[in-house]
Amino acid sequence: MKSSITIYTDGACKGNPGEGGWGAFIEYNNEKVKLYGYEELTTNNRMEIIAAIEALRSIKEKSDIIIYTDSKYLMNGINTWIHSWKKNNWRTSSNKDVKNVDLWKIIDELNSNHSIEWSWVKGHSGNPGNEMADELANFAINSKGEILK
Image (cartoon, rainbow, N blue to C red):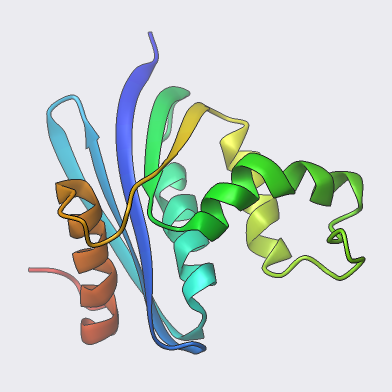
């Protein structure tokens, strides 16, 4: 039987590019898991994708997953744009290289390992899971990735 998992992800950046953090809040089987990470020089969009990648990497068995993100870039990328990008050898409709292609290839592979519903949630709107992911992403920046105590 596949597990049912809910994931909230968020990315943050101080400057863009600048110091970045990502956070993921995962709920399953009455457990809550908090993941976060830091990069010294990155972009907000990269942090949004990395949050989803790291959350999915933490899931070891095939699962039914709902991922909530407040990133339209991530939502549109994984649900719509990626199909054309792959057909066009990772080129955009204007024949430019897809930005963050390294991360899009990883998330595409991880996305195929599970049954995933990608859902958009408005950021900073009081959704507890999204707020926790945001807190984790900002904690990662402020602590430069030190371990949460």
